[in-house]
Image (tube, rainbow, N blue to C red):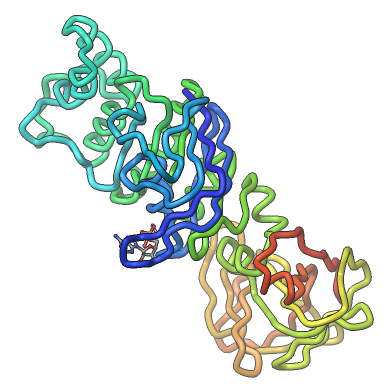
Length: 365
Ligand SMILES: Nc1ncnc2c1ncn2[C@@H]1O[C@H](COP(=O)(O)OP(=O)(O)OP(=O)(O)O)[C@@H](O)[C@H]1O
């Protein structure tokens, strides 16, 4: 396995669309990194650039110590020794499971006897021991996806690239394969880049998560870091459905532009006077008595959740998302809410696209 290093990578599509902008990404040998972001943010472009299907316009890509693309030259995909699995089970229907899996070994010129051994080994690894002679048409979706995974692993790739590899599967199979994928990649110390639109999947599987927007990495960090210290209001909104309110920070309190709600800070870290946005995570909005309320509103949606109910309260035309543990409020209830904690992002940082840690206002009321 190998580390993957992207340095200052730009990619422009021939029609002028900016695919990637100034990507710096160091993935350690044996690390599992998930790429997440809204549709069109550049996840697939980034993965395909590492794979070699796209050549960066500028910047450098290294696999281990080897430079595989530098803006002038790019090593073709078949010479990068990477394993790939896509959303649709891209396995050949006319070849048996064993022949599907042995294909990369045949291409690499591995002798037949060694090939057979290796095929058995990887089939066992993905939980398909004994499936070597099966016709892919007789397999379930999950089994076919495991064949694709076995084939990607057969030639001992330097890294594994997964593009929505689990997305076509139904729960709970997807859940199970997710767990298996994690233990398998950990045990084999595989370097993995996993593109997914599923935030929960990214948080559950990855050592680190890179959040993309408009072809740029907005933040990269462990699941704990990106959730508790989102680097921008965008990341807080995208990963945690945070409520985002524009306004001004003045004299240690924040007043929202639209409704003049006042969120006061007793402890303000690195807060700066001036215009900005506060991000309030749903778990940091609490139901409370009316004397403590920052605002009041009517419950407009209330969905059951395992850990907390997913509740939307509408106050003067603005929807506020809250995670409410315990008894589920009823739609139409009038409720009082307070903010327990907010993250402050000055507007000038947002304009520059910087990713400094936010100022934290705790117990803002
Ligand atoms: N072949 C292409 N030619 C021109 N622009 C492209 C091409 N492929 C992708 N793009 C553009 O590049 C940007 C990034 O697209 P990409 O497919 O990488 O996004 P994504 O994050 O993978 O999206 P999704 O989650 O919808 O798959 C988008 O603006 C997209 O429209």
